[in-house]
Image (cartoon, rainbow, N blue to C red; front, side, top):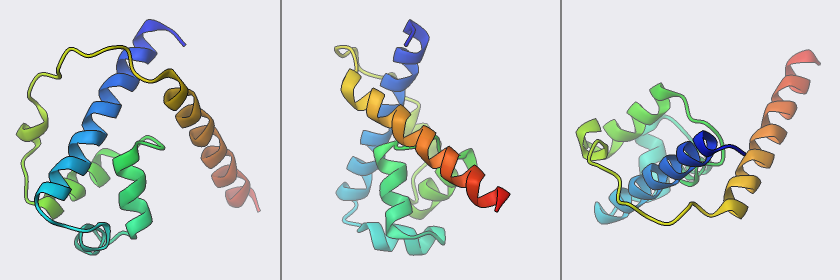
Length: 108
C-alpha cells in the first residue's frame, strides 16, 4: 500500500467515524436512517464502517437522512497518527470479496 492509499484510507476512516458520531448525536438508529434513505440498517452500517466504497449518491442520501450539510464534513481533518493498517487491510479484503461476489452474481 503506497502513501496515497494510506492517506485516502485515513480520510475515509475519519469521514465514516464522523458519520456515525453525527447519527448518534442526533439520537437516530441505523434503522431510522435506513428508512429515510430507502436502505437497510445493514447498508447504513456498511456506509458508517467504510467496508466498501460508497457511491456519492448514497453518501448524499445519508446526509439528507440526517438533515446535515456536506459542509459539516468539509472541515479540516485532525492531524492524527497513521490509520490502523490492519483495519485498512481487512477493508481491502472485504471490498475485493464483495466485488467478486457481485461479479459472479451478475454472470450467473
